[in-house]
Image 1 (cartoon, rainbow, N blue to C red):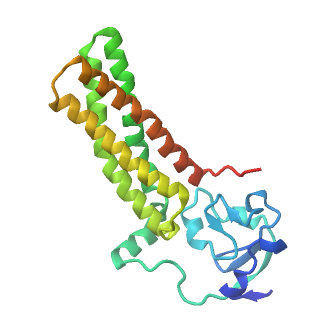
Image 2 (tube, rainbow, N blue to C red):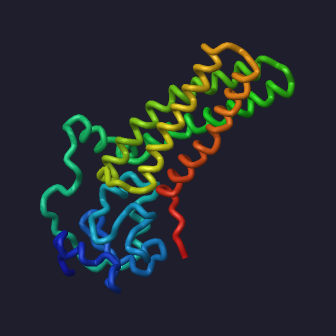
Image 3 (spheres, rainbow, N blue to C red):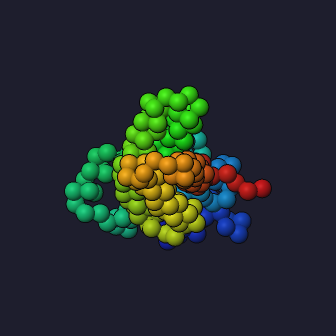
Length: 233
């Protein structure tokens, strides 16, 4: 069976009519027949023409998905191709591969949810007159601000580790709107806790809470575009 080096494998990337090859555990598979690889890139994240052993270790599926396709060769390795990581971090990711992909998705939903529900509880408080709803809105707002920090930290880590900190449009938009989100949330929280209660302040507070909803929607939408990309026809 033909042996490929990484440079030769890189040529089979689906461009200009070339086949789509990927490697896993030293085996090279021709995935040209897969509709998920027809553009040469899988899920807008994994390029073809390279070794995906590390990527698959953190994927929601195993190598069996590649075993369905014909093996066309073996890969001749030329040193370690994975990103050089500090010793303890490298050992941690080798032992728990899911940490490569999942820390950010595990925490990012909290600041999004806690930024959307305050406006709902605020409206319930205004409609019913129950102050408990207003208190809940404030607590949710505080939780959203607190969870923003681990969400951003894990987001930058994922961006650096899995995307080599490339200036992807979706990532740049997420970063900008994430800082806008916490700025609006902090303004609303400060207004409620420190500001005087007046009709004007009540209106401004409600508008700040309402503004968190579209900002959270933009962050969630572009995050989803990275995880579940929709191909343009």
